[in-house]
Structures are given as C-alpha cells and as structure tokens.
Image (cartoon, rainbow over all chains, first blue to last red):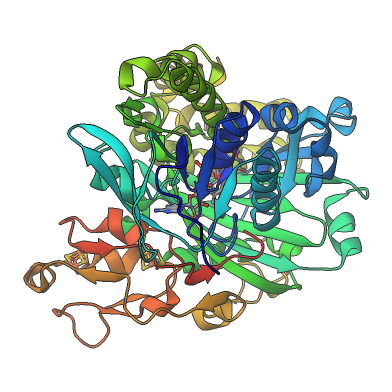
Length: 443
Length: 105
Ligand SMILES: Cc1cc2nc3c(=O)[nH]c(=O)nc-3n(C[C@H](O)[C@H](O)[C@H](O)COP(=O)(O)OP(=O)(O)OC[C@H]3O[C@@H](n4cnc5c(N)ncnc54)[C@H](O)[C@@H]3O)c2cc1C
Ligand code: SF4
Ligand code: SF4
C-alpha cells in the first residue's frame, strides 16, 4: 500500500472487519452520509471468511437495490434435503417447492464468500465508505471508560474515531481482550471443516438433479455424519464446485478419537455420500469456528463509543434444522448502523444514546429466534446419544422391517416396525416423555 | 477402504495434499504459542492437538512435552483457543494480510 492520508480523527465510525456484518453496517452508515472507515485483516474482504453455505439475502437485497442484480451468487437454492445417517444407512427427506424456483427465490443462494464479501464491501465503498485491507485491529483505544479508537498493526497504527463497530466474527479477539465479551466454553462453539472440490458443471447438475441456475443444500445428521457429536455434515452445490464439510462442537471434537479432518474423510466415504462427491479435485481446504451459544452467549451490545454485531456478538442460530448466521449478521449491522447515525446526529456516542440498536434487535426476528431456540444447545447435548446414534439406527431397523419381503403379511411387519421404534424411544412412557421434550423442535 | 464394497473409492487426502490447494503467505513470527510451558508439561489431554484440523499442534514422539506448533499450516479457525482447558493458548491474528487467503470460502 502507498502513502496513506492521515486517517486519525477524520471518520465518524471505524468498522472492525469487512465481513457481512461489518459491510452491512458500513453501507448503512455511508448511505446516510457518515464518514466510515472499514478495516479488514485479509488481502481483500472475504479472504479470511468461510461458511457452508447458503446466504440469506432479504436485507442485502433491500440495502443494495439494483446493485443486487450483479451480486456474485452461485445458484439459487431450489432443493433442501435432510438425511439421517447411521454408519451404513440413510433415511432422507427432500423438498423442492415450486415457489423457490421463482424470483426472488426465497432470498436463499449458494455463494462463495471469497467473491460475495468483496462485492458487498464494494457496495459500501460505492456509497462512500473507505476500505483498508491487510490491516489488523489489535486493540481498542480508551479514554476513561469510553472507547475512542483502535490500534492496528500498521506503522502509526492508532486511529481515533467517535464510534467503533466490532464486526470481527466468531474469533472475537479484540472484543474479548477488551472485556466486552466472555470467551465461550468449548460446548458453545463449533468447528466447521470443509473441502471445496471442483467438477464439471454437468456432473454436479446430473448428480443433484439440477438445472442451470438452481442449487441444492444437503444436510446430514447422525453417527455417519459426525460420530456421536452434536452437529452434522453438509454438501452445497455451487456452479462448478461442491462445498463438502462437517461441523460439530469443539467439545465433541475433543471427545471423538478422530481429528476433524479424519471425520470429514469418513463422512465423504459414507455409502450415501460417496456417490455424490466422488471424483473432482480439492481446490481449497478450510476451517472456521461457529458461535453456537445462542441468546445466553449474546454480550452487552452497546458500550460508550462501541457496538458489537454479527458473529462477534454470537448472533447465530443453529437448532439442527436451521444454521443461519448470514442474515442475522447483516440485520445487526443494519440496525447498529442506523442507531449510530441517530446518535451521531444527536452529538452523542455513549451507550445510552445507542440503545435503539439492542432494542430494535430485541424486537426483530434475530433475538426472537435466538430466544426461542435457546434451549436447543443444552438439549442436544443431553439427548445426543438418542438423537444422533440410537435414533438413526432404530429408524433403519424399523424401515427394513416395514418393507421386508418374505412370507409374512404386511400388517405383521408394520406392527413389528412400530414396536421397534417404540422400544428405541423407551416404551410408551419414554415416547410420551420424548414427544413432550421434542415438541419445541417443531413449534 | 470404504465402508461398503459397492461404495465408490473416495480420495482421502492427507493434510499436506489438502493444504497444498490453499494460498498461504508466510509471516516470520508464529502467531500461536503457549503462555506457560509448565502447563503443557502437566497437561494430560492435549486437546489442542485433538481438535486441530490442520495438524498444527503436534505431540508426536514426546508424549509429555510442550506440543510442537507448525504455525504455517494454520487455517485460522481458532478451535485450539477454545479447546485448551487451561486457557494456555496464545492466539493472534497473523499480521498485515498474511496467513491463509481463501479464494472460495
Ligand atoms: C462452516 C460454517 C458453515 C456456515 N454455514 C452457514 C450457512 O449455510 N448459512 C448461514 O446463514 N450462515 C452460515 N454460517 C454462519 C455465517 O458464516 C456467519 O454467521 C457469518 O459469516 C457472520 O458474519 P460476520 O460478518 O459477523 O463475521 P465474519 O463473516 O466472520 O467476518 C468477520 C470479518 O472480520 C475480519 N476481522 C476479524 N478480526 C479482525 C481484526 N482484528 N481486524 C480486522 N479485521 C478483522 C475478518 O477477516 C472477517 O472479514 C456458517 C459458518 C461456518 C463456520
Ligand atoms: S496448549 Fe493446552 S491443551 Fe495443549 S498441551 Fe498445552 S495445556 Fe494442554
Ligand atoms: S486455529 Fe485452527 S488450524 Fe490453527 S492451530 Fe488452532 S485449531 Fe489448528
């Protein structure tokens, strides 16, 4: 990088991290004429970012307007499939609603973060924000209790500004070092490991039954996906690549005899998965953490001179059926950006002046979802043996019985299959208790 | 060997083969370390080693020692930081854009 103008005290707000949350906040503030500095540690926005995944785009589409037509998406999500894997068998359900095939495609797309995040940061730059890359924020600057700027790893690295937006993602070193957030225990953080493999476009479309533009998300649970752990495996279809990965809590990774990369290889070798991923060549291997603590891990969001947004604030939902963080990262960036604009116009940056951010977030779907599913992570850990090991096995055994071809009538097979399932659930009382416990999963 | 005789053979790449596909820029000083050697000497579980998907943390050959840290392999997931039961892992972001650069993500 060449000579840089003196950034000190020039900006209204400094955003730490040009991920989805950071760029959403920068774009929101720049659109309302604040001077915004966006600082990214990677070579470019997206260079350090990894997800599954599917991007959920309602707010991004609204914020970027016509620009969204040029967003680098891979495929719109047309098919979602859930597979329960025992070590050798699969029971699956697949959905392909007609509505998803029509624009705006339920605002769900497979993307590659390498180019999507760069595009999204570009929208903030076009709206007037300034981006510097290859710059790591190493600490916050305080005056008394107030946060008044950041330290970076650049020469003359201190930059002062009235507001700092912490959008550093799940590995939130700066927020934790500044005591704005506690370090989560290993049960509340997941590790995701992933291979991106390249294939012919036709191969992907044939294997997954896709047209030119639609894509598929295959989610897998059970022992065959990630051992006895709370988590799962996934395959997402891009245009010419597949994203193949596993994600499970760090405490489960500690318990499992296999290392995460071995678990990934085992998942790829599962008889139901192997035919989908065979061949091709690996073009990238990546790993990233996922903050899964839910509502109880969300820290204080507004401080004197600073706010925390996105994964850094644990605004991520994983309840087994949904893994969503992209939408909540953007929504929190948008709401925080608006709150900062309001506070700056009032000539203030203290925590009290920023309250509309936590308040708006509280009444939005973000906190609503997190609070609704706050029980999930503890529940999944308590029930993991049943959910991820016993249930997939019992289901397969019952299915084999139900469809069995021999000389006995169907009714006998059906009865036996039902009894097998009932036994797995712990008899009538056990099943009733489980049904009561599990009712929340679908409500 | 795959689990089922009819299952297609799947490539089981080594960590090195997997990392070979990635773009990496070296930085001279390790961004990882341990605060107290003593803690690692007393540690029985080596959770840092168990969770690392890139074979950065290694206790090969020295069952009771301080793990070796091959920081150049690091995927920057942060898992070792949460895994260590004694908070003994030093973890910094690699400086000035060095370390892994993901092109796909
Ligand atoms: C394996 C995996 C699969 C997932 N799948 C999905 C999915 O399918 N759908 C979904 O909606 N969500 C998914 N998620 C979650 C989703 O990726 C996150 O919720 C989302 O990326 C959070 O955005 P963010 O901007 O808060 O953080 P990030 O995307 O992590 O961005 C943080 C940014 O800050 C930068 N940064 C960090 N520290 C510093 C610093 N000190 N100085 C300067 N810059 C810094 C980083 O380089 C990065 O650009 C998945 C996550 C993982 C790990
Ligand atoms: S870093 Fe932590 S987990 Fe690893 S050997 Fe040392 S004390 Fe044990
Ligand atoms: S951050 Fe991840 S890849 Fe790097 S050393 Fe720690 S566990 Fe290994």
